[in-house]
Length: 84
Image (cartoon, rainbow, N blue to C red; front, side, top):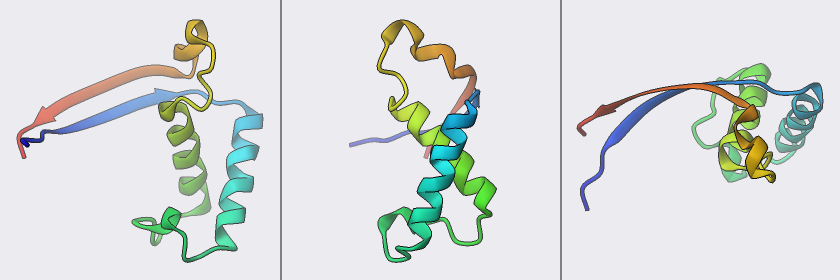
């Protein structure tokens, strides 16, 4: 199967509630250092981990249970395709 690589930049918005929920999640993950969550996250700051968690939830649809409002968190997306 041939694959392509796409580099995408999203501009997202999030609420204080979403930030606090992600912060609690990251704090919980710190108590479990052997979980898959930590793969590739070495050296990242708490702020980076929190924002990554928010972005993951937004892009995975965790916050998009209402299809008419699904795009409210994703403000902008830029993408470019690379062969590789």
